[in-house]
Amino acid sequence: MTELGAIAWALRRDLTLAMRRRGDILNVLGFFVLACSMFPLAIGPQREWLQRIGPGVIWVAALLSVMLALPRLFEHDHADGTLDAMVASGRPLWALVAGKLIAAWLVTALPLLALTPALALAFNLPTSTLPVLVGSLLLGTPVLIGIGAITGALALGLKSGPVLMTLLCLPLYVPVLVFGAGAVEAQAAGLSPLAHLALLGAGMLAVLLLAPLVAALALRISVE
Amino acid sequence: MNPFRFAAPPVFYPLAGRLLPWFTAAAVLLAVAGLYVGFGIAPTDFQQGEVYRIIFIHVPSAWMAMFIYLVMAGYAVLTLVWRSKLSAMMCRALAPTGAIMAVIALLTGAIWGKPTWGAWWVWDARLTSTLILLFLYLGYMALVAAIDDTTRADRAGALLLLVGVVNVPIIYFSVRWWNTLHQGASVSLTASPKMASTMLTGMLLMSLAAWMYAIAAALHRVRSIILQRERHTRWVRQLFA
Image (cartoon, rainbow over the protein chains, first blue to last red):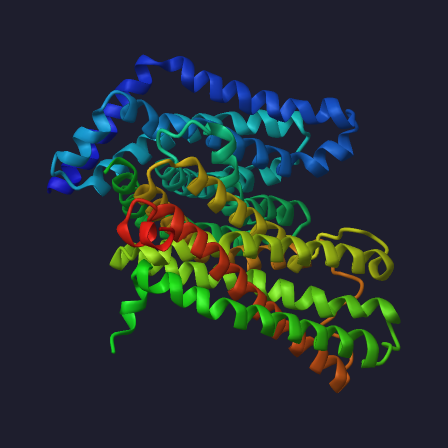
């Protein structure tokens, strides 16, 4: 029961904090939309091209947005000493981390998912691909946040900041991007996206189980 | 005799120093022999002409790039589980060699690809996953370089290596699948006819040379790391007294 209590406590705390700093959520959303809108400006407004690159662009932009929001996950708590208190509290650290990850997903990924249909329209994606696009993001974003939590915990408090995070995260994000964007592409090509989605789902289950444990270990390494 | 005795830096430092010349000599001799067989004796390939000879450098370096990452992951387990200091030093000593091997594999692949595929770079599954492997090496080196505290850097680097090694096969298969969905490579090495035995000999000699070189380079580097970390101890001071 203490595990569930710890998860709920960390979840409630991080959600409260996020609601007090709504600007952070809007910043990530703004980045997501802006990053997507750069591509039509760069390659031209031809509808067929946009339709072709749309799923990939939306997926890459979502991936970068999640990565940009990752430093918030542990850095504030590290700076004000909360993290040291969490490690020392005797509560299961993995459960606290799990609560934080759920909160991060609700605050970062869920708004992105809500905006995705609008962006899909902007790229002229056929409506039949929309459920697959949202579904692939639904399965893929927890993996992004889970892996990002591990690398973020390893790089805790370092001055090298975002560049280091990019170098650590992006290579590990490759499979998620391949299967996520691939699912939409398969649907657009008239094939079944189920194989891609099944692999994404398997990845999500593995990350749900392992990421809190590994991230907690990484936090201990960084804090002790 | 306890083999873990050699995990103590004061014991390992002179041992590595004694082994180093042997591995260096073996690397040079094998490379000379391998290059001679590869560029002098091996026949011209009837499909690819002379350009195929770059595989005598390309294949061993690609092989080492992958293998060194696995070895580092092995040392990472020793670092995390037994808190062995020397294993973490070995990880750091091996990383630059692995990254260099990945760079050599990518460069020689590009040089081979231009006349063969007509492009310096194709998004072939093996090329792409080697590129990502290079980024995994760079990420590891950047992380350990960014952390000032040695113990934290060692353990954080080890954990990153383990996360990476779980991901390497997933990355490889995801990229391969992605590649087959897009377009296949026009020429495939795996589909090429059976190699002449001299080609195989040349490749074998060059692979052994790459092994010996990697061991020698790692031993050389780990000696410097040991000296740097143990500079305040008595045995290092006596060494330079």
